[in-house]
Length: 289
Image 1 (cartoon, rainbow, N blue to C red):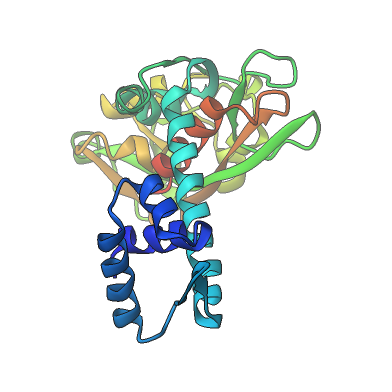
Image 2: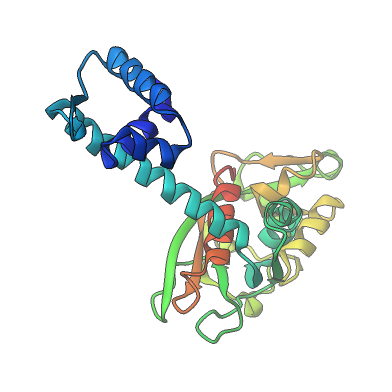
């Protein structure tokens, strides 16, 4: 079935006299009549009664009008949304945790910019949080769902963390067959009094009684220490996969599950540019390990 024929059917339903329809569509009356008959033949129903007053809808025609008008409305909505997206412009300040911002979001922003060249982004990737309620950012990715503030919140994705070490490090150190064996190894982790979220207390949760020996408030610094063979540490899987030399250790025992949440200030949540970036982040993080 031809969509152009359906649109022509709507034109005739709104302008029963073929002369009026012809003036609107820039088609001659003979062509319009032929295409309407073709549509009737395809559907197996009579859509119009041909009268002196022009083409009058039959019951079947009235039912088809309702359906085609719904299709027309949906088509117009899509075109309007596309036009809105093409016109979207302005600057977005996005606050994000350091590891996610550097390892995943920063490399993907070129693609977003190519799709939306009039939208500029300030990526604030820190070892901490950028506050949306305090207007430090338009939107921010957090490790826990915020419970206060004038915010629109959506869950982006779950993600996993595991214990890793390099093959080179493991070749020169005692075997790691259980958690107890970790007391004989150099552990990499956070500086305890600089941990900015309860979600980052991995050692208290998984390795009670053990403390990291090499510490940093930066997950990127921890990743670099583990990658250099300085010790073993708990790292996000999406970061660890960037280094093929890293080996996952004790997979059945040490498996941390966390989530990323996107918070947008209510005042700017309805802006097209923010919706576009929000949807982009959802798609990007949907494949996190």
